[in-house]
Amino acid sequence: MVRKPVVSTISNGGYLQGNVNGRLPSLGSKEPPEQEKVVLKKKITLLRGISIIIGTIIGAGIFISPKGVLQNTGSVGMSLIIWTVCGVLSLFGALSYAELGTSIKKSGGHYTYILEVFGPLPAFVRVWVELLIIRPAATAVISLAFGRYILEPFFIQCEIPELAIKLITAVGITVVMVLNSMSVSWSARIQIFLTFCKLTAIVIIIVPGVMQLIKGQTQHFKDAFSGRDANIMGLPLAFYYGMYAYAGWFYLNFLTEEVENPEKTIPLAICISMAIVTIGYVLTNVAYFTTISAEELLLSNAVAVTFSERLLGNFSLAVPIFVALSCFGSMNGGVFAVSRLFYVASREGHLPEILSMIHVRKHTPLPAVIVLHPLTMIMLFSGDLYSLLNFLSFARWLFIGLAVAGLIYLRYKRPDMHRPFKVPLFIPALFSFTCLFMVALSLYSDPFSTGIGFVITLTGVPAYYLFIIWDKKPRWFRRMSDRITRTLQIILEVVPEEDCHKL
Image 1 (cartoon, rainbow, N blue to C red):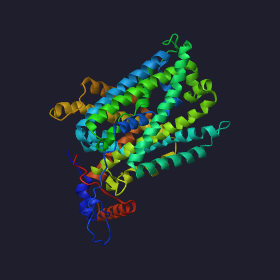
Image 2: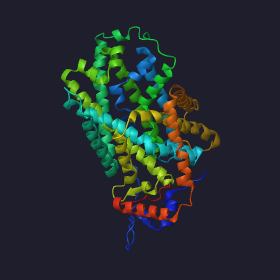
Image 3: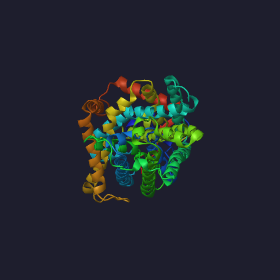
Image 4: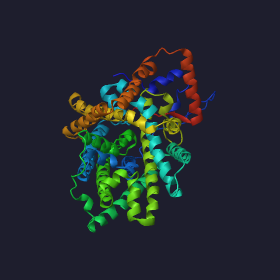
């Protein structure tokens, strides 16, 4: 397997030699370099790890519109079963990632595992699509939900202007980027606070729901498995919606190198988080059905708001605020984790070298964080983000399925590999099959959208040969690249991480 680490190649330009000790490139300076190491420090504790996982899984979906599962199952009872099964399947994927994360102690998540098992080309394609389309679009979508619900209490009697939503959304995105650029500790602390807000919002829904059950409000659970007939394709699509709602359990693996005692922290954080989320999701859906019928749920655009208006009276005005905070937590956790993916990909030579550098004082991967800002803003003020996400949603499950299948491959290819945490083989086998089944289903059920996404993904192949393999680029191009990197390095006050390959 051929790798092209940035740190080993950028010295050809001359201007970065000697900078790993925390010194910025200077023009004509003869001062000796300082000895302070510039590294990403291990600041992710168990509580912070749990908050990252829960905070990125629980977004707006469970509060706004969980009707995708119900619509494709046709009954209340079957929808609750799907929510439970999807939680178990997500736990299987998370446990598989726990083994990968404790065996391959590098940050980067999917990218790192695919690189380790299948080589640089598929790994590059994965990060190519993530950087250009998936992450900016996904961040813009969840940010729009934040903007809409933070303004909801101020526009009770009228429709919220779209421009106002986009402007407040842009402010929210900028705040998240600045926060993650300034301090790892503060990003993690705020994520803990926002996670408690999410769980508080779920408790606010679950407790009245339980009280309704105690009062005997079970009419919507009678004949729970009867209802309109679901299409034969309905159940697989319901699984797709359910798995999407649980997506986010893999984000802690993007930060492996920053986790304290990862051999214990990663598996424990994953198990605790998935148990909390699965129980919370199922009980939240049960609570909805104590007050809202299946027909009413399918007609509602914001189930949590409808539920709270019926049971909580004036306190229901707080629900949009909690939803907005939940979205903000997903934004923060996503940027926090995915910036490490770009950082690692740059370190391996698959993205511009500036993205593998760290701020000399704040010790944050500043360039890898802010690279998302202009791309996300373009997505925010462009066309239909939801269609774009539909084009590329299959790519997420394809590469996650490949990464988990790589675990099985490593068991046979490298049986002596140190595995502090080990799962039974049926767990990754079942999960990878589920992922690949969802990919095949999307090709069958929506060949047009999936085909467009497939073509966009394939653009990573020529990009790989053009930007990575082709090493006879014109001299003017190399000089310009070096000049841009040097200028950005001085402006942003960033240097390469010292000993970044010594794990």
